[in-house]
Length: 234
Image (cartoon, rainbow, N blue to C red; front, side):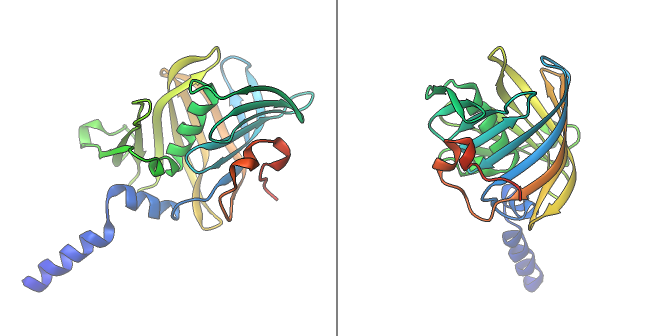
């Protein structure tokens, strides 16, 4: 009996917390991810859009949108948000209320990078609190803003939903929800290739990843200061 109890205790320790299980299911901490997507947008500028995103660590994010002219780039290096049209810098914003900061945080929660933020409070959700599509759930509350995010996990501990605050044009705060599926193994990591987005319960966009490229190492902040320096899929 003692041997059985000891083996059970060791097994529990080996499995770790729910967050640790989710990190292992993803393939471990991801140094960064470059993605190319085709997205059907249903509000604002409606239609089919092509864009690229790059995320690295909890505070670095880039969003590049194809247009009929030169691409538009929005970059956050962890300190300053910059906007470019082609290679031309059009604005800089170092304020803590810059909208792209909320996009960066939401994405970092989705890829579990945000949990590296000092002071973030993590709680496992009770069954009644979990998102409807989730077998397990986590809550993350950030010390700098008090913002709260709910993360749904499937039976395999993969992230299947994220809900939290995002600033969207015209720069109003919305409760944004992303539901993820079509998980694929790429470069040693598991990445969702399909995301359905809603804002305040209304359909926002349907995003399908065309190509995902996990980065071999975390790029420096300087890589998010200029479109030319951004990591890309080969």
